[in-house]
Image (cartoon, rainbow, N blue to C red; front, side):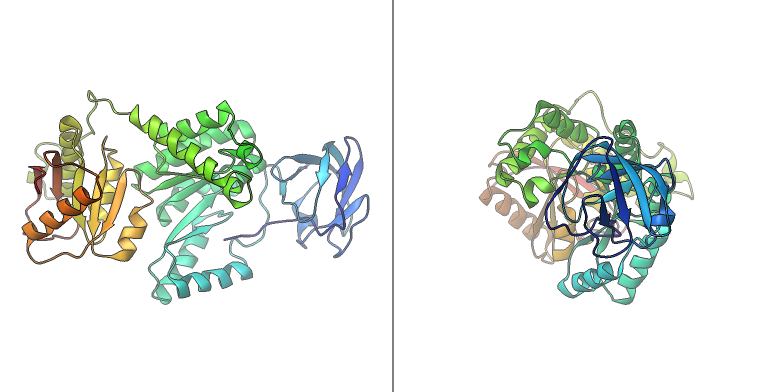
Length: 415
């Protein structure tokens, strides 16, 4: 969703701003002179103070605030450039006092409910309150839609834990985050956001500026390639392009570069000497506190260890997606093929690292369903006859098994 963006007004033609030049922003509508342009936000005057730094388009240009009147902010250009219509404005170190969900956003949310979208990405989330508000609305509308906050405002960082806890994942939106906070903080915050999501077993997306040069050029910079690799190595579930595919000259090439770099980086991460940490002590089964979720975690951990040792893919059958999500959390070295009979679950699982979700109806006969799953993987050339697979039956809902029984099997693929 667009969120509460502060933008400059329309200009008949671009204005060149030079270093040291005086330039003004006014809340009066329709102003576009050589030294003054409108902004779309009535509280802009109260949000800025003398000494603040205004950033245009995330820092492509910057201006220092010198003074203000009842309707105008007077500035001096620090870093010049070409100012075009409707440019995004930030105040370094501050967030606008606009609501996180605007009237336009509510219309878009209703559109999403009517059309059955899988996720909302909520812009400029400052605290968990807006997430709770949106989830309450979705519950009242009987809508099964997950909410992903974009972490991109200065105000969101102190509330990071509560925001992610209330949400279904997070997006590291580095463009505005680097505009509102010192740029040297962005890599550290990216790592912290990824680590926080991983600790809560929630997916995390790294976005913005990943292949920025490919908006205009057919090949990326080496630094951009390293940026993709770092996000993968930090264990992000997904990496995302923005302007590169929205309006860039080489959208398909950009996707291919990102895909190739991510695959190559992932192939270097597996270390057979490192096994996932077990989540339960050997005597945990004797404790009253031990519960089904802990048992599922233990089986997810052991299944990952087994699959890594034997170098086999994992097959899991799921109705709600919980076991596939848990296996993704442990980051097995090979693919997790998650078979589900729910379209919504299949589409949602596509976001999780290492998971290939496959829609398939389940029958009452477990062996018959296993056989059809293997056949579909063979037909898709995901595996060959004679290969071995690790099959996991565990999770929050039992399928073909007793409630108290969990299975890990290694099977040889046969036609």
